[in-house]
Length: 535
Image (cartoon, rainbow, N blue to C red; front, side):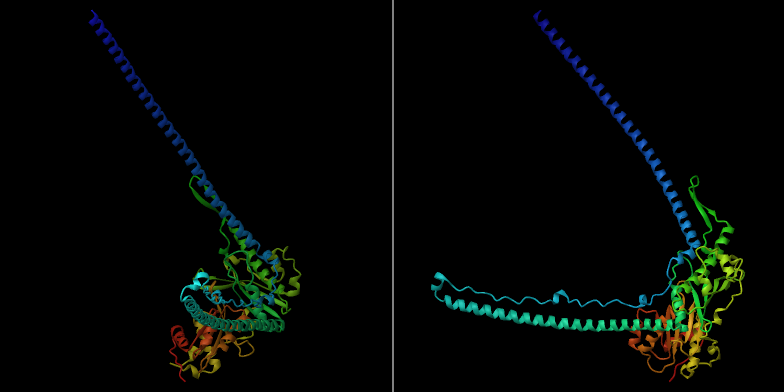
């Protein structure tokens, strides 16, 4: 009976333990399920958050893209406005400026840098003698102490003497190098000062000639005035030729005008969101025509204003402006030069105009101008005065190239014939070349105009039919003539060769030296002439 009671207690305890274990297992299952549900909920919540963030980022990215595209449109429209404002303000832009050339500004005042001695060549401190302490106290009693001290002192003196000799040699080398550098500096400074003096003397000579109303100086001065004129928009040719009539004090300017393509054909830009495209609204043809007529009139009045305002020598009584358009004939494709405006204005009457208030085309017509009614269609007018009727230096040049025999000797040509030959050659090479009279022309043998945009300009050509080497003085004369003429480039042609000084002087200057060999090559390549140079 007692044993059965014991078994029953054990079984009940085991049952309770099993029930407790089962309950714990079920609790663990429920806990794991709960944790799984929580994790799944967290994953779903994180995914939803990412989706929301991605959507927000896409919205933001799209907004930024649209903002960027609209910014492009704003920039394009701003550029259009600036361009049109600049075109409409061509005349008023120059009215706020003083176009007078200040001769003091042309003079060079840069001083040569002072001599700087290299730091490594500064004097060094001399070597210090080595002090050998004498024996003291008990050391004096050591046998031979006095003798060893004397030997040490002698050795120290010997080493110091060697160090002093090396020091003096080093300092002597420094002084020699300093003297060499100083001599080199003095030479370079003397060359700089001489060049400065020469250039300033040329400016003084130019000023004196201009104030004396020398024709060449008047032309060169006004070329500088127009070359310095700053237009408020890009893309304008700013190419011109100037002639001066001494008797009538008449300046004639032949000025290249921009083509109608200088005006933007777009009136406005807008962004089309549905197409993701930037589209332009075309400018009305009538507006383009009116604006182009305004540009032609603005450049005409602007040029007259600039030369009259800058006329400090009172060399101008009247000025004729011929506006030309260099383009291509749409029918033939050939290059053509079309005059579209010509006005001849007395200085006194012109200076009374209030250019800030005038209606430009009406002002031109009131001055008696010949103005094309359709410059946009290249409708030509008859210039009041042709440019080549004014510059009396220019003469008719004969065709020397066509009249030469086979393999001519260039040294057998007359000086005038050789100059005409060189002028003919550069005409063959594409320059608009004018041969000048042999008179007070500053050494000019020919004036050429390179009609290429940007790279072109006025070119002074001098020809030397020499047997001997051409020295630096001829190159200096050419450079001075270039400055007086306001030329972009100078070319010196000779039948011999050039010295080293001539090449050194022309270095880094817009001067080209063509020797006899180069001349023969150019004649063969561009004129088909197999010439020779034989003494």
